[in-house]
Amino acid sequence: MAPRQVKTKFLTLLVSLSLVLSSINANVWPTNGVCGSRVRYSWDALSVDDKKLYRDAIASAMSTGYHTLFVEVHSDIKSFKEAHNTCGMMFWHRRYLLAYEDMLRSLGTKFACITIPYWDYFADYAKFLTNVCTTFEDCSSFLKDMGGSSGPVTSQTINGFVVNGNCVNGLSSPYANFTSFCEKSTISGSSCSGCIPRGSWSLVNYPSGICYSSLAKYLSLQFGYAWFSQNIHYGLHQSIHNMAMGTLATYPTSADPIFYSHHATVDLIHQLYFDCQIGRRLTDSEKRNGDYAFESCAQADYTGVPPTSTSTFTMYWNAVGQTRTPVESHPRLGQFFVSQPKEYWQYVSGTDLGSLSYSYAADELFVLLKDQGLSCPKSHTRRLFDVNYVDVPVTADRKRKAIGRSFNLFQDIYDAALTNTSSHAEAIDQGQTVDCLWYDENFGVDDFSPEFRANWNLPSTAHTFCYNRVQEVRTGRKQVKVGRWKDKFRFHYFTMTDTQLASASEITSTDEAAIISSADASTTSTPTTLTDTTTTTTTNAATVTPGV
Image (cartoon, rainbow, N blue to C red):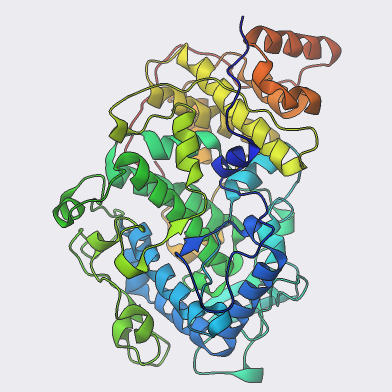
């Protein structure tokens, strides 16, 4: 059998696929105030000087009081509920992040070109599953650079909401300084806590389900914007908030600077979805009316009228004891919002916002996914994935090797699933299923904590994606259709040597079976309780609501 087709892309594009770029030697943000296009970068792509500049911008935002004013917008209950309990979630935060980014840029000439960096949790998850690291914090250079999670236990009241956690001032890292953080805009100086409450990130696992199968599913399947929005919202978005705990598990969640990079990643996925499903500039009419541009939806317990494409944003500043004010009318915040479009349809694409337009340095992700065979609907073709493993040099760092192993596994599982399923959608879904089962067997599947449920008023039926999927398999509602799927996980994560990974594109399916057989002969297989193969069909397009 011929070897799998050799890649024409180098590892840098593989890294782009995982939403992380190789380190950039030069600084990406000019400090002379002369900016080019607005581009957001991965945190891991930033130079030491870039990271310090971002640290200083956040510290300045805190010391000038702007940061807290933004927190008082996000913690307005009606604004929060529109931003988190409806399909407006990604659009609402797109506007909010743009205003915060403009605020950072206004703080001085040296900050004028700054953009909010995104956090690559797909690469972090790959590291976790390949045993490169063992905890939420240990697996993320971003979380460590942003000050980690160590500090004395604290209970703060941030804009009227009680927030518990570890008091993190950021000074354990050269790239963080939260000593000027204030819990409300009516206090300053020594009256402020000077730290951010965070969960114990070094004691918890990386959240489940942040795999390449999930990403491919979200970007490629044609079920409309509401389906996409709810999958992102109740999938990876909620899982990150839940695992981070502390401030991120409360209404004033944007008090923690990691919030902005978390939502920059969500926004990147939103932009990639637009590029994949639509891929061209829309007319105003198309933005208002297209099912793939925006659809209205809401949680069952949402008491308001969910926004439509032509709705104006519910976005108010609301500090304890102060007069609730539209953001455009606030005496200090207004300058960052007043020139922005105010209706949902105007935020369909980040690259089509006039003078506010921006892009992501990981746009190669979309290109590589297409090159791998992920056909986007706009191309009018439905080509299946080519099973093309990527080669990762022996000299590459552990993160790149983890990324390569995880991506190769993703392609292997997809190819195997196709032999027992009837569609691209079902094969992709199988990848998510076995990823959740592997996580559960090795780490125990995660679920929303009681504190997170209480703080965000989640119903008891709401669970993480992988918790639901594991239960569906156990009760027979979902079936695994990938033969010897555990062997494939072991092969890519542990059995394959670094030397073999360096020429993975030359490994045939026969070679792979022989390597697995050899490994089985020399080691005792781990006992399992889950069935590896079945024959029942699965559902491709279930409605996604909390707990479903």
